[in-house]
Length: 221
Image (cartoon, rainbow, N blue to C red; front, top):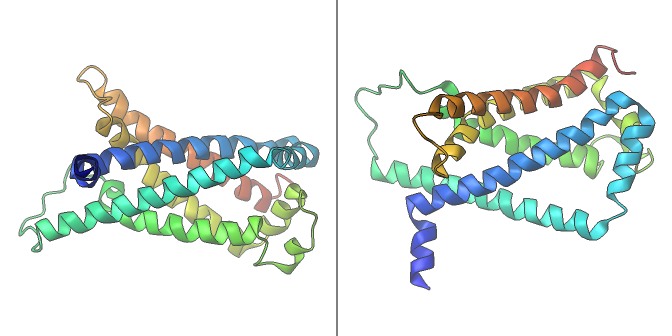
């Protein structure tokens, strides 16, 4: 089916796939941060939440596989578009007028690579528990204790906070671009769309960042 291949590999098709997968990944982040915020309700709440997720293995693994496919597709088409743009213009502009472009929009590849590195570390750290022997010795659902142990370390707390800055910047531009790619733009509410992206991105990243920061400062103990 050549028309399907052409539609997918065209710049417009690639952007649509990036927008859809970006929407899926953003939705996951919203749900993930909502669950993580249960740490403020105490050990029992967050630990029961973690244990409850494991009671539905089919749904859990279905979500994991879906997110993995979405993430790989998002990353692959981002690389495809970037390489295509470079091939179309091998020589940079003599005068690069980027007054209206934000820092986040001009450094999506950089923040994306930081996010990729963070995801690998985060999985090794909390999911597979391969980076810290003490965390590895804890019970499978002792999420509260794991978080307290990890984020009391300045290096771990700082690395998570830096990653959240990258996530906030990436989402700030990515969500606004997603709205435009999916045709959710109109002169009546374009200003709202441009504002919503940064607001949602900073909001999600800020909520995530509040957890290691609160633990490190001793507000959660």
